[in-house]
Length: 455
Image (cartoon, rainbow, N blue to C red):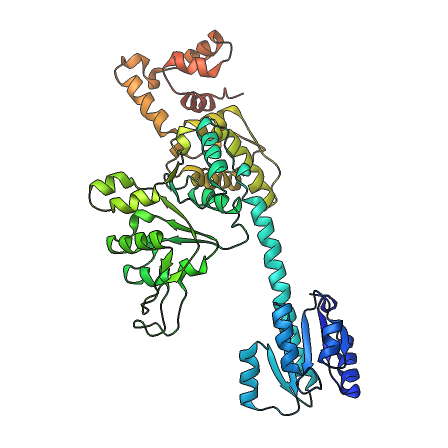
């Protein structure tokens, strides 16, 4: 972090002290402007000044008055007060008034430098976080979420309409379908994108801590509450809160959540007065909430309150057209992140991916592709590179097809010559040959290897 990016306005009515401190700070690499008193500092203050380092006792406009002026007109500027008459009460008073530090004369150069560098580091980190948030916003833009199937195009059209609004959204779908990604996309394409996006897994919080986790608590409100906490609702004020696995929320908490949604007000544990909050709520679940309502596991009134706009994410097996595109994207991403050479996919590999059931959905697809890339040395990925779980269904179908046939037509009775004849009859079309032989294409590949006929 270059110190020259950190600008300081030094205010000191003693010429010798002002010159010495300014020289010291400039030698340390800081950009320093000087003023002889508070009135002079107000004239010389420039927008973007990071720190005002001011003497306390000065004529006309003293350090306290200058600090009040800076805090009012330029909030966000750091302020350090310096005095020759330091006392603990004065220091406490200065800090409460907004000073970042209270130092006494004669100044200890290293102590002063430590305070300034701490403030400069904090500024650098704030800027870095803002930069990274900007990159994340670009990355989460939902038009970059991959899906060309009609089902996903419908999801995108709903996102277009609902993203700019405060309307509560309920996202349903199996585990791994991308519910949190859709939630982030809603936030990042809304007027709230500069504010916080927080996600809470309702199933991961112990029941006795859910209320304080959501709504906050006062110090001493319960055993172990050694400090006050704002809670997720107040931390997300002005932004978006994702309540993931909302179906796991205990019934007692469901009624309290409903009250917060109706009143836009939270009451921390240990308090009686509520605090207004402005939070957009997005809920996600892989449960069937309608069934839970019928079974008495989920409040009907809360369900109606959450189910204003609903986005049902289809499982991957229901959108096979998206699988080749997703696989291509993930392969490129994994190769880039791990320094692998780019890989290609042959027809058998893509066909196997599209036929697989994908119980873990998009998450499982990405993890499976990474496993294949790590274990396979081939530039072109083939179905043989996939684990056996991708072909259990083929094996079951094959067993069913051959179980009622006479023994001479079973796989064990097929000779090398029979396979050769089948391939000759189909002009080398292995898929058609396998069909005529009553076996799967994978089994045919294995037999060709055993007979030395692979090529």
